[in-house]
Structure formats: structure tokens, C-alpha cells
Amino acid sequence: MALLIDLKPHEKVLVGNTLITNDKQKTRLRIEGDAPILREKDTMNDADANTPAKKLYLIIQNIYLAPGSDAMNEFSNYFSQLKSIVDIAPHVEIFFNQVSAHIIQGTYYKALKLIQDLINCEESGEAPSTLNPKEPSNRNKMEAQLLNQAADQLVDVQNNWDALNIDDIENTISYNRKLWMAFFDGVNDDKTSPKKSTDQFNLLNNIVNLYQFIYSSSTDIIKNKDKNKIQSLIDINRATATALLSS
Picture 1 (cartoon, rainbow, N blue to C red):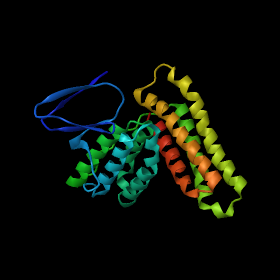
Picture 2: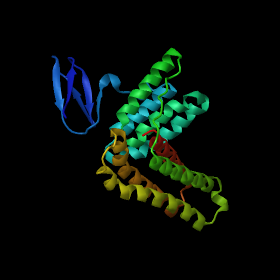
Picture 3: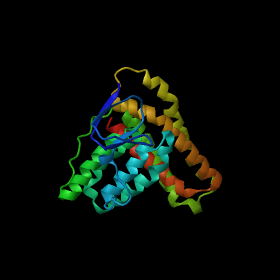
């Protein structure tokens, strides 16, 4: 279904990485495809990202506009900024559960809209409203539990890196990768299953990109003994578990 956008004279819009500037008269654009689209008024630049919420908006904007699986390269920045906000304002953590669910599902534009609400609250001094989570299915509960358990194991490796032998480290990293491989292998079957909500389809579609990122990161951790990348795996596991419990 095509997206119709009415542009005012000289108004700008981003379509993917292409900036389109309207001429002197009002114009209607008909855009087909899956390219990310942002009006100029909805974009954030480095100079304007001067509050915690605005910095998070800029990071999600970069994720949204990044081509394909390149978005995953910004995930560590997202989770790092998210943690810094929750550390100083723990009461907003429930709100961010929904934001992170959209990040994991690949519905980045919806995450941007939620952060815009947070920016408005930041300016007004009010707390953001929280969304009531849905009752998850038993399968989602089981998968979320497995992801959280794997995240706990990764935390243990991260905290005891120097004390563990390489085999223990590789076994933990490999177990997490194999867990994601099982999700990856089940994607095609789940897509053909009836009664799937839009958010569930979004999560299934994005698992392909998530697995590719996790596989690459796991390989780097083991090959280069790069323990810094463990945190991204932990964050993705936690956020995906949250997304499953809210789907």
C-alpha cells in the first residue's frame, strides 16, 4: 500500500538516505516500498540532541535510517543510552520495555513516536504513560525464559572472563548462538501459521537480522577474545524476552 505525503512549499523529507526538498508549491508524493521515511520536522541532529531523551531519539533515528541489517550496529549505543536514562529515572523502565520491544521487532518508527512522547514529557516535567502488556502465550513465556537464562549465563561470563577457561567461554557463547539458530530455523514455519498479530510478524521478520548480528558478534568474541561485545548479546536477549512477553 502506497504512502501519501503532502509537502508544504520548501518542506523536506528523508526517504531512506535520500533527502527530497519540495519546490515552491504544495506537492503530494506517492511512495511505495519499505524505505524509511521521515519528515524534516521529525528529524534530530547532533546539535539538538542535548537531553537524554533527545539523544536516544537520535540513536533510534540512525537505526531507522540505516540500510538493512546495518541497523544492528547501533544497538549497543541504544542500550547504553537507555541504561543511562533508567539509572537516573528508574520509574520510566516500564515505558522503555515497550520501546525496546519495537526496537527488537524492527518497528523503529513506532519506537521513534514513543520517544517523541518522552521528549514532550521531558519538557513538561511529567512522567510518560505506560502501556498495559498483553498476556503472552505459553510458548512466548518459554522462549523468553530461555533467552533470560542465556543472558544470565552471558553475564556470568562477562563478570568472570579472566577466571574462566576458553572452553567455558566458547560453550556459553555457542549455546546462546544455537538458541538463536533455533529461533531462526523456526521463522519460516511460524510465518505460515494463522492468527499471528502484526507485532508477532514484525518480530519473526527481524529475527533473521538479529541472528545474523548475533552470529557475527559471537564469532568475534570467540575469535578475537573480545568480551566487550558480550553486553550487546545480553541486551538483545533481555529486550527480545520483553518483546515476546508483550506480543
